[in-house]
Length: 333
Image (cartoon, rainbow, N blue to C red; front, side, top):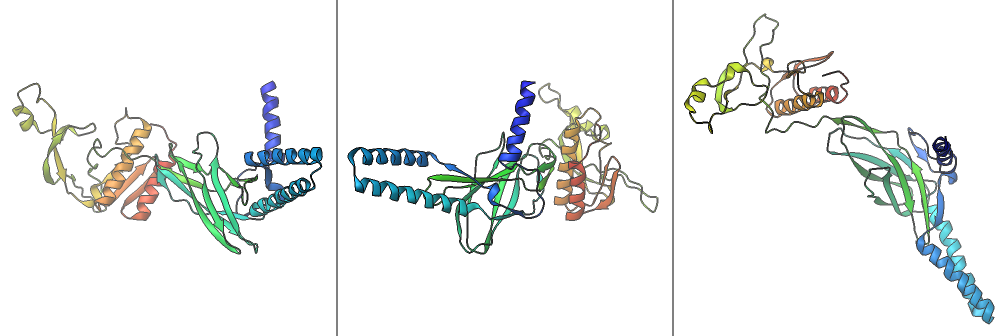
């Protein structure tokens, strides 16, 4: 019960005091209530120094001491105003986010807009949250101008990756105080499955497909050589003559024939055709590698994943549609 009470209090403080909100679509305006300011460590040391100067001036009745103390205090007050003004009344909006493969950095583009007549300096933006890097990007914004900032987050799982919460902070101009604000942009990155290593992936799945004229093709017309057996290879491609020549235990390895060519419509990337015992993520990873290889070799390919079926095609649109289906797949193995 105590833990639940702590969570409720923390949620209330985050929502009411620190203005932590859900994802905010469109352009966001940093009002006065969304900007917080506290003394920094140098600011606290500066405050202690002012107190000591004031006490010394009283003890020794130093007029110049009083003048110096009040002058420094006035500078601190002006610095507080400038620090707050440097961050308040900014306009924020999220830009486009390009899809990435799992394990790569998702790059979130952010727009910081200044519609006031005074420039902004040394504003630092960075993601906050558990497990996120403590790297921040600085930005200066001229009067009536805008600046773009790109923040990176390493991805680990396929699917949608929402942008983490962002903290904007500044210590300009003297560093005696720190002003900050929070923003949750309404943007997300699409994360494709990580492609299987090219060293272990089997050849492209060239298989006979029914055509509109009722004819088909085996899809293996041009002999390209032999190679070591890999998981998923068909038994009919075993190079028995070469295997028989290997008469020692050290050389007794399975060898298969490798083919290339065949009709372009014979290339089918089908989830069902993969080995039953493979993990679902491993299957999606292999299909991702096959898509990239087919695109690199300019081979039109058909795609089948659950209820999603695309006819043989090639190009950025077809590639993106297939990879998107893999990224958002929620079926079973």
